[in-house]
Length: 471
Ligand SMILES: Cc1cc2nc3c(=O)[nH]c(=O)nc-3n(C[C@H](O)[C@H](O)[C@H](O)COP(=O)(O)OP(=O)(O)OC[C@H]3O[C@@H](n4cnc5c(N)ncnc54)[C@H](O)[C@@H]3O)c2cc1C
Image (cartoon, rainbow, N blue to C red):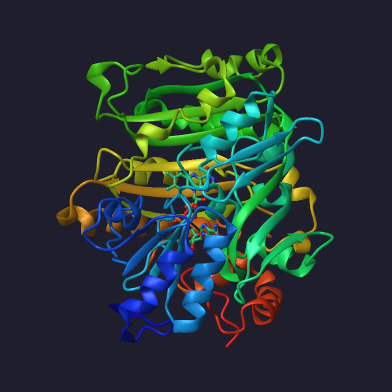
């Protein structure tokens, strides 16, 4: 069968050699044309259309070891799929062997120690579901079908980041199959250099099979949801956002966004498709205090919709899911900001008015707080001066509209880049963003990451990622 080598050459692999891998695996293997192949090979972003030669759906560490050994012995390109949400499509590669982790979704919670062990194929919603049984939560992201592995390996932020830092700041250990096909533990006590690299350096150092997260008391009820106004109110609403966010307690996370109104039942029909401004809030402390903390938002101006209410934390964690379906076309640009300036708000309004699709948005995520209190070198995520994330999120349906939507995103980004700290979020980088943007994302950490890479993966077996190639 035709497969690609690690350096991209095409080779004919003997069928016997591939069959020998299959009998060593507990999980199923799919080839093009098999039921299951398409589901595995496609990722969230339909702009990415790659075809691995084979997919192994791993069922445990032993399957992963067998695949890594097979790739090493036969010089086969490997790619690893967690939740498949990476916008650059890093989970998939033409002609390679894909390790699809989607059958490894177990979660074990130790409520006494406040630690959850999650298998690496888990989606965010899997972990929230099991931890919330105990009134606990890990620091994860905003959209529940996102994979925990990619999110954590690249940093990770969500509603709880202001209180406890990046997701990767709150990992106590990982189980990893290394390039020489050994299953090792990475924690502050064991293989500490590898552990450091994994908390922001992406999938460069091995296949993670499990992640242990520190848990915090959250919910089960929080105050969370959205309030929306017509875009004509945007100057006043964004000024409210700017001032509220500056003084908000760490329990309160505020997100501002501008976009055409989606056809959501909580928004009036006549506003669907019309430009709106919205504030998304989560108060993760006591709901009684949360009600007071968001009162000024709910009372502001004349909202066209308000679903900022007392609800379960698990429900809030999936509130945005429908706006981000698998199979649309997506192109993003992101920058970290240290503050929201009035001039930036004016740019948000200007570029939101030029959006070319009903699904695109300009978003400001608030993340400042605990992450700013750690030392820069604590983990490779770095960017300890970041207090907000600006995300220009292009999203549309048809390939002929690619150029117009990519152009909108790029133009808005070029015009707003000057507000950046200089850093950006590595997990939001698109396919066409290369070395310069990786350097900006990882900053000073890049040098030390290259040392970890040279020690743990000198032959660059794990290369279909934001690669820290030592060469
Ligand atoms: C709709 C949407 C919402 C998002 N929201 C947030 C958010 O709120 N907060 C946030 O921080 N980020 C967010 N992100 C970004 C997200 O963190 C990244 O897209 C991340 O890469 C997704 O992880 P994944 O496992 O789904 O990705 P995949 O595409 O499966 O993988 C991404 C990378 O990780 C590697 N990888 C995956 N699994 C493993 C493993 N087990 N071992 C080693 N390497 C592995 C892959 O090889 C690839 O290089 C969002 C993305 C989307 C599309």
